[in-house]
Image: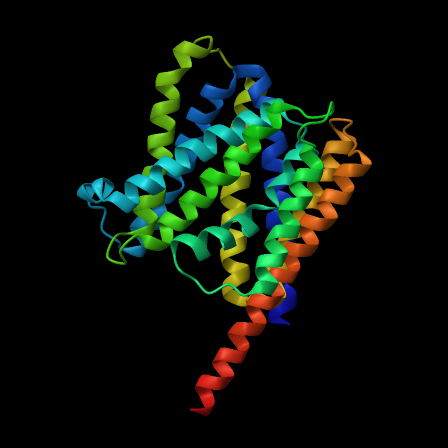
Amino acid sequence: MANTRAILFMTAAMASFAVADALIKFVTVEIGVAQTIALVSFLGSLNFVPLILRSGEHARWRDVLHPTVILRTSGEVVAASAIVTSLALVPLSTLTVLFQAQPLALTLAAAVFLRESVGWRRWSAVAIGFLGVLIILQPGSAAFDAVLLIPLLGILATTTRDVATRLIPKEISTLFVSAWALLATSALAALAVPFFGGWQSMDGRTIVMILASSVAVTLSTGLITAALRMGEVSAVAPFRYTRLIFALTIAYVIFDERLVPTAWIGMALIVGSGLYAFWREQKLAAEAKRVSGTI
């Protein structure tokens, strides 16, 4: 019963994320990328305030100068910029499919920079997943669009952020670091606004969409946390891919987007390899736990 409820929470979180992406895509048309990043990131940082107060964790400003925190913050800034820019320029369907390769990129980075053990099976899954990315991008062909390199930058930056997060000392507040990264992103984006057409006035509809996107992201984060605490990771995590269903439906119905056949093939390779890599990781963890329990 707990797993069923957790799966429902994870699925709802993915639906909420898809809605947030669509709202941000609309907002960028009205006020531009820099202003959108500034507002959405600032509202996101405010969402962490009650969490920090409730947790009792101490916010020490000197922690922002720690090398791993600087690296994580830099990753957050670049990731937010690349993702929002991608939402403005890249079809939602294509962007969502490409970003399913991020867990595979994290597996690769963890093996290289964190010295985590990755066997040949998961290396093969990573290779197949990135083959799917190449099939979607079609580099060197007439169908190649250089704009699609922006989502790849987002994947690289998000992976950098996640690796840096694992390296941050335990005594540094995770909630504070997360809030600081969003606040820094907001400040830098606000400084960039004058270079991208200046601050645009917002009507009630745009303000509502900005607030709604912030609520959707916060809701998604909370639902994911609840799902992972409530159910078994092996049962819940694969349902992250339901985001594809919601995003592709929104892209089709609202933005009139359709994936080309090569994108479907690439998506199948990315999702299939991601699910296999996750399954393999869970199997190895279970075997290690069983062995340690017999010693």
